[in-house]
Image 1 (cartoon, rainbow, N blue to C red):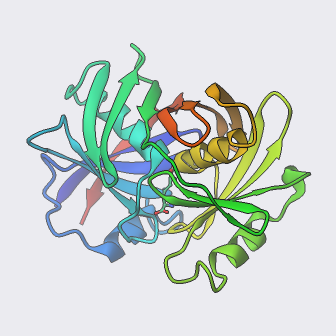
Image 2: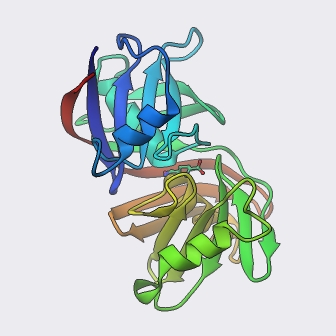
Image 3: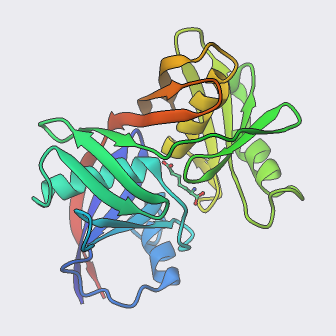
Length: 260
Ligand SMILES: N[C@H](CCC[C@H](N)C(=O)O)C(=O)O
């Protein structure tokens, strides 16, 4: 089989994309996905996505984590697949597509490399000790820290993700430092089981957890991650977050063929 793939990255969160409308890869084998995402034995990526047809939407996004298992919502993956749909000529500068957590609206700049993706509304933030826990399409744990640049995110994140509370279903673990005019965020991702350079649903959750400690209103939060800059915009009425947008770059890096 000769299967064409494309590699995308959004703020350093990187993905393999396959146009499933034309691909011959019909039986999705989780071990093969893990191998393709492996950085030594495969292409290397934090996740793999199939773009498929859907009768009521422009397309459907099917997302797998790099361990080969189907993932929950991936925000940066969502932004990358929107850029991919534009590249394929399926959409122009706006789209409504379906993902695992429901329909998403997105808009895209003319050049196609800046994508603003609407995320699900959120009305529940729980606490776990001094940490916050919420679901933005994927489950997230958020802890505020000092000196985040020095933190051992892998060890700390892995311990939290595997503690008795979260071991069974897993959780994505985010650490945030308030830098005054922006938030600095680092994330240990479930399904990658490592720190990634950016996590879209993660920074969305972080912006909400930090905003609930402030005045309600329209809130725009600039975020710094290891792989670049993202921005989260939403309306917060004191209990609910609506009109939530994850904004940032989404770039095609290369294309290739799987030969097997
Ligand atoms: N990198 C992703 C999160 C992937 C979700 C995955 N780690 C899971 O919990 O299944 C993002 O940009 O939102």
